[in-house]
Amino acid sequence: MSSLRRHLLPALVLVAVAALSVPVLGSDAPEQMTPLLLSVPDAPVPFNGTDGRTHLIYELAMTNFSSGEIVPENVEVLGDGVVLQTLDAASIASRLQPAGQREAAVSLGKSTQAFLFLNVVLSPGATIPQQLTHRVTARASAAPSGHQEITETGGSFTIDRQPVVVIGPPLQGSGYISADSCCDATRHTRAALPIDGRVWISQRMAVDWEQLDTQDRIYSGPREKFDSYTIFGKPVLAVADATVVDAIDGQPEQTPGRYPAGISLIQADGNAVILDLGQHRYALYAHMQPGSIRVHKGDRVTRGQVLGLVGNTGNTIAPHLHFQVMDGPSSFSSNGLPYEIDSFQVTGKTPGTSAFDEAEAKGTPLAVMPVSPPQNAKDALPLDQLIISFSQR
Ligand SMILES: [Zn+2]
Image 1: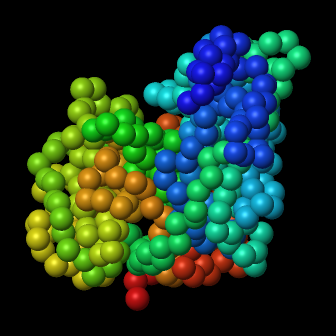
Image 2 (image 1 turned 180 degrees about the vertical axis):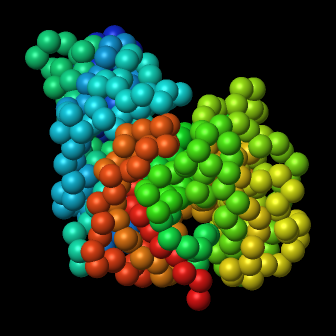
């Protein structure tokens, strides 16, 4: 390093985020202060949703390496140099989540990190790009007046083109609700957990399956009773020929209507089964009834085989089946992957998560909007808040 540069660098730190362009010896491109550091920890695997679109679900990690607040104002997602999606300030504010928090925020405080949760949707028939990057415009308050508006490009990555695993249904019958599913429901998609030294989102594509009765209710009868719930006791099915890598039983049912107190990470899944689907794909089924698990570690199972019964064990507020696919055998320290179910019907839609939450809290009918005629879905991931029928083949 030349003596000039050795003296220049401390000066740059002092002016913090001044939008200086510094000529670099041997390069035509000027160096630029980038107080907002951008990266994508996990490249997304494109998949087909029930909307017939290809989705890319991932997180843009933003680190504010400055002594003042940074407000991202505009984010463009570019695929092979072409703008695929633009997020304005309001959209960013609904998707930016500071590290360790579950509420969205409009800005990054000084010296903080946040994830911007992205759902990039490609037009039908569009070619999937190879390379994605981001152009971010932001206001950096630590920069000198007149230089606070910054534009940075970063967080480039190559899309992960591993094939999406195609599976069978995890349940059988009609009236199932794909609650908190992909892509903009926040409870699973944004469940970022720091475990063993890195951040994981194993639940990125998880679904909490609930079921409606003939009057579109999640339960009828007392809210605190398990068998008031339509889905309680329904058989949980192997989604593929697979090997059981874990089968946990013996955890007690929790009283529906409130989350249990004092549940550890290890107990959160309740009674659970993890299947190895091959090629580094694993399926998790959580919250099953105690004593209902019919398989053991090491067993080979076949598609459609009953693994256990839907219950309310672990960290759960109501009987349901939590199902996810991930890239490792741990239900938390793994990376959530998309999957496609080979055949099912979409028979309706709910008005959304808040209507669902109210129906789950009160046992009142959900105002389901029928899909008529039902949509025959093939090789698709059930998106959020749909009413689904599964038949075994
Ligand atoms: Zn869940």
